Length: 122
Image 1 (spheres, one colour):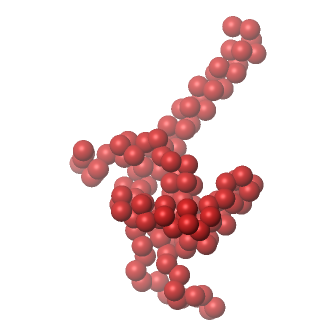
Image 2 (image 1 turned 180 degrees about the horizontal axis):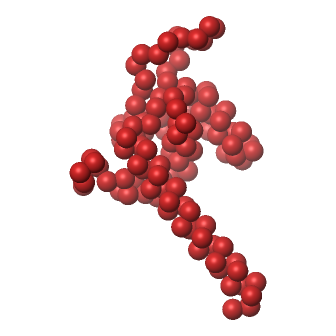
Image 3 (image 1 turned 180 degrees about the vertical axis):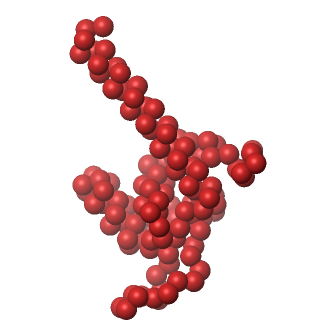
């Protein structure tokens, strides 16, 4: 299914949690696998840990789905390992992340409304 901008993002929803965390880690720019693992760990206060096998399997599936792309050429900083593979969001990946974020925001609004109703005795 396509629209004028390519495949429809909603067909990927709801995202698997590890897919969401990886896409969110790439929202600000390119990142390598270990950096993604560390960011997820920090962002979730240690509640979500992407072990290497999980992370690299997820990266492969995201590549296959066209949600991320490997960065082919990258200038190396001092002390940086040339073997590191860097990833970035594709245009589709950005649309999927935006769609999933909106879906989750809507869900949080429903939860908050239900809590308010419960607290008010309605």
